[in-house]
Image (cartoon, rainbow, N blue to C red; front, side, top):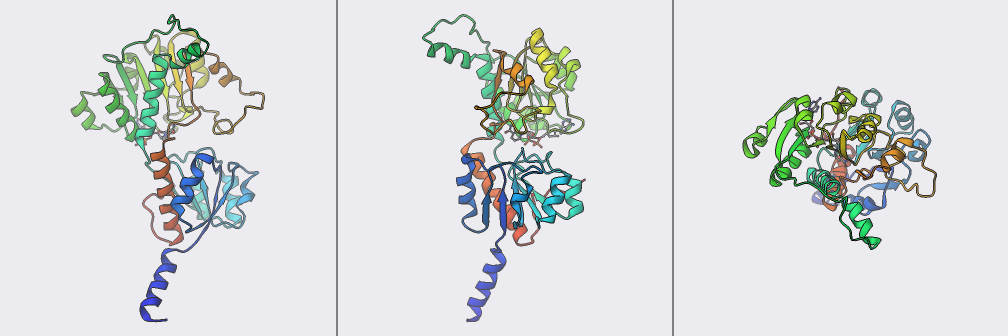
Amino acid sequence: MGTFALVAFTYFIAKYHNVKVAVYGTHKFEKGMLEKANAGEHTLEFIEPRLTPATAVLSEGCDAVCLFVSDQANAQVLTQLHKQGIRFIAMRCAGYNNVDLGRAAALGIRIARVPAYSPYAVAEHAVALMLGLNRKLVRAHNRVMDLNFALDGLTGFDMNGKTAGIAGTGKIGAAVARILHGFGCRLLLYDKYHEEQLVKNYGAEYTSFESLCNQSDIITLHLPLLPDTKYIVNSASIATMKPGVMLVNTSRGALVNTSDVVAGLKSGQIGYFGMDVYEEEEGLFFEDHSDEILQDDTIARLMAFNNVLITSHQAFLTDTALNNIATTTFFNIGCFANNAPCENEIMAK
Ligand code: NAD
């Protein structure tokens, strides 16, 4: 072998060190994109069930696991994975509240995520929920399918001129602000960090969460789930909202106390509720339960309101977002394979 061939061969081995990855909770909608982004570089083991203490054993013989929002990477599961030889977790999502970071660090398991794949996907879905609720699109469609072309009960409101309160003005909240500015909404913002461009370009105004609740016709949540944001919407904050307010949550279920929201809907204090996330969604969302008896009484109650619109954690689900998720996930896996630093790595605090 000549010198050039040897160098090229060594580079190839160094660059394309193959690892075996167990992809938990694989859905049909993402498998093709993941295979395309991997381009045959690493060995992928697609596993349909999500990661739980019972399914941890399925990644035996792998070097890494690839996880999503509903996988359970708690201390017990991480210990089991480590025993099996897992040294890397590639999250194919931005959030990582389902991973015990401290335990992973103690075990020497590295974790990387996809910090941003398409804020537009989530922002546009939040606005879709607003419009669907406001213009009662599901009710209207169902009526027409029943040859009922009457309009009574379908009156909506102009978004133009209404006050929209955006809690969390990071990547997604800022995208929502730009869309709603286009609708002619007045924008009230809440965030511990102020995005001055939103103030300068769109006449938006930062305020406290209390004052946002007090003044907004529409409230949309884009905060991460943290100890200080858990149940930020509760009976006390709901009581300060405008009667008949529209509440939309596309962030994380536990930002709202769901029982308090049900009470608010029953009293009419909340006039509309759009939810893409649910605090008890684990084991329910992302799966087909159509042959089963629904056991969750809270979601059953929510489903009974005609002013509640529920989607099953699909705000991220666009082709652009899936493609970006797949590409970044395999960039992260490549960093692990080559023992290289990774800009998307999550460190325990
Ligand atoms: P981001 O990190 O860009 O923005 C979060 C914002 O929240 C930041 O501006 C931060 O300053 C602010 N913040 C954090 N803690 C706060 C606090 N205690 N008080 C006030 N402000 C606080 O995140 P992002 O990309 O905009 O995503 C927001 C959330 O959307 C994610 O955390 C995730 O839960 C959710 N999400 C949902 C989906 C979906 O499919 N439904 C997809 C992606 C993300």
